[in-house]
Image (cartoon, rainbow, N blue to C red; front, side, top):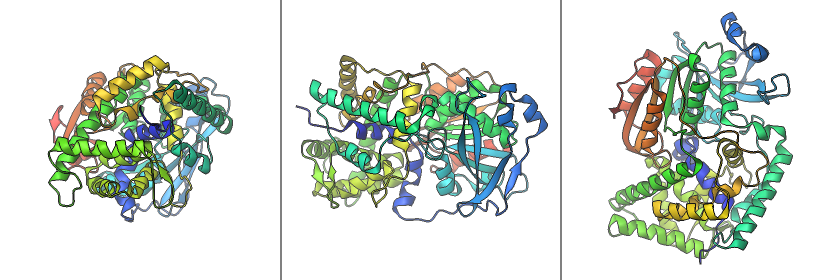
Length: 522
């Protein structure tokens, strides 16, 4: 009989699986490195819209595009502002919400405009990404030519955030387990998720029904307008590529230099996306095991296939018998898997995984719990610093119709087990989060429809576990006016962590307008 697993924690695993920010910053955060931002200036500044931007704005939204935005010093060396956008774009005269933005101003003399950045998710904070990692992951050449602007999309952290549970309730939710292979266990999970959804609706309010990616893309255009940029220059990682391609389909004439790194295929269903991830993770686990066996101190042994089997054994052991960490908290298999998958987003973090696996195989799951906590926004003092888990669910429930019937979810699990014998079952039953969600999905997956003339740069990584490299190829085909750049490497996304071939190609595109030849391989 399949032992109990925690549905909310598995959803968290998927959230990590499509989020770039945590992966990029993980080694820096866990090693307590200091991240330095550029000098954003110490004086307040404001922006008055250019007449041409105001004239081009839709009449019903002109007040948003022409709003006065005051950028005030914040976060040491940065400037921050809150930009008003409509709560509901079908009712532009109705209520508004605020989008929190943070700017790293250029020191260069040849400013080309602003570069807006989304680190992924859905649920990742662009504000945090630019503050914590912008000076590390974005080259000096690009920062010399652009103001780098991070923002929290609607529903995320500082921007009308999805709010559901207290910190104590979040801990309890992560530790709870369900026997999903039984009708009673599945019913219990659905009942708990229904209760969580009701709390989300109560605490978040009307914005919960307007967190879809199309609305976020419309916010992005207002951000472009208030930054006085006639074209949107954009760097999107992972889910950020979906946000970017959605923008391109809605606003083809204002696409500037757009980099979509770790591309998602918008034509895929939620279940197809999940199966693609499951296959890619299985491939990445084998690559990690092969690498580990060649390193001193690797706790695995035998052939790479033997080593993968040993990883499955420890996961199964924790599933059968959850273990106590040193702080007394119980670690179930979903929490263990949440920690296990996080280092796969950057192979520089594989040594952290080796350490955590080695400790777990000796009986101490505390290092794996620390990784899981990092992915879940949990601080060492027990508080939660973000809402990425809830934002992930809320946005996906609006963006995707999901299989929610019992027969369909169980058939999906069997397919996932075939796609990934190690982790497949932990990606299953995603529909349980949305079955009783208070708002219906507003989007049907379809290929992106981009009619613009500006070349878009799409990037894929051959060993990417979260956004398989074939998705980048498919997105490039759908965009038409685009160029595909492929990095032969491991981990999630490429720019800012790969090699000079990728870095120079992206910098040359953003700064000099030189689009790399299509199908360039680095």
